Length: 171
Image (tube, rainbow, N blue to C red; front, side, top):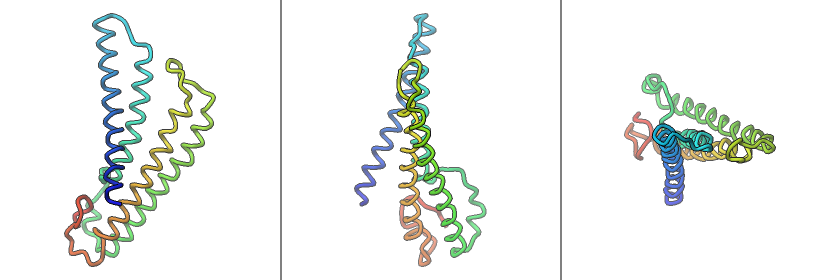
C-alpha cells in the first residue's frame, strides 16, 4: 500500500507542477507576444485561467497530505492526548464532509454546465468544472490517509510524544 501511495502522490505532484508550469509559461509567452511583438494569443488568457483553476484544486488536495492548511496549533499543543484525539477526529470528519460536499455539488455543477462552452477554447464547462469533484475525491482519500496515520501512529495512546513517521504533529 505504501508503494501505491508513493506513485499516487508522485502523479498528483506531477500534475500540479505541470499545470503551474503550464499557466506560467503561457502567461509569460502572452506578455512577450503582446508587448514585444505587438500581437496577442487569443486563447492564452482562457487556458491560463483553466490551468490555474486546476492547480488550485490539486494544490488544496496536496495540502491535506502535507498538513499545510491554515491551523491554530497553539491550542493543540496544550491539549491532553485523549482530548486531542477526539479533537482531531472531529476536524478530520469536518474535512471529509467538505470533500464529500465538493464531490457532490461539483459533480452537479459540472453536469449542469455541459451546455456552456468557453469562448476561445470552445471547451465544455463540464470538463472545466470536473476539477472540483476530482479534487474532492483526492482530498477525501488524503484525509482518510492522514487520519489513519495519525490515529495509528502519531496520536496513538502508546505514543511517547515522538512522531514515528515523517509528517504529523509534533506532540
